[in-house]
Every structure is written in structure tokens, then in C-alpha cells.
Image (cartoon, one colour):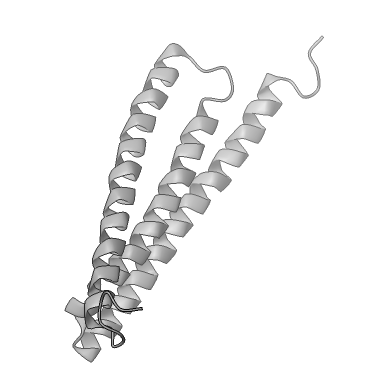
Amino acid sequence: MEHPWGQAALANLVDLLLMLVEAAGAVVIFIGASVAFVQFVGAAIRGRHTVDFVPIRLGLGRFLTLGLEFQLAGDILRTAVSPTLREIAELAAIATIRTALNYFLTKEIQEARAELSGRVDVTAPGPARGTP
């Protein structure tokens, strides 16, 4: 006798969770892109788009990184119920690609932060370097 919460019910629950997680990832990416676009337009109107570009990219990169994490979680959920060898292989390929994207995006964010703090150190008023 099959349990009332059998495989079909579990698969339906996982499908619902999958939709929610993938939607969350899409919403995070959309919000990040929207915020970055509004900031870029504002900087362009002020004529400062080249100066403000790095912080805008940095903010967008954080949203993209988070969105990719949600998408990877969705991929893992997709294979949670009775995965086939093919689904496991696809998950491994997708996870590798998304992890590589995330790695390089994080690396670029770190470089942008370093560039931004280097620019702030050079242009910020205050004591000269090397003085307390």
C-alpha cells in the first residue's frame, strides 16, 4: 500500500518549491538589473556615468551572484525526486557552469571593490598617505 504522501505527492511538492525558488532567482536578477539601470540613467543625466559606473556594476554583480545561487538551488531541487543518470549529469554540467560564472563574477566584484577603494583613497580629502 502506497503512503498518502507517495512519490507523486512529493514530486508535486518539489515542483512547487522549484517554481518558487526559480521565481525568486528571476526576481532578484530583475530587481538588480532595474536598480542598476535607474542608477546608470541617473548618473548619465548628471554627466557622471564614467565616475559612477564601478559602484553600479558592483551592486548589479551582487544581485547577479545571489540570483545565480537561487537558480542553482532550483537545479538541485529539480533532481531531488528520483533523478536519472542523465539528470544527474545535466545537474553536474549546469552546476559547474553556474559555479564558474559565480566564481568569476565574485572575482570581478572584488576587483571592482579594490578599484573603487583605490579611487576613493586617491581622491578623498584627508591626511596624506602614510600619516596617522
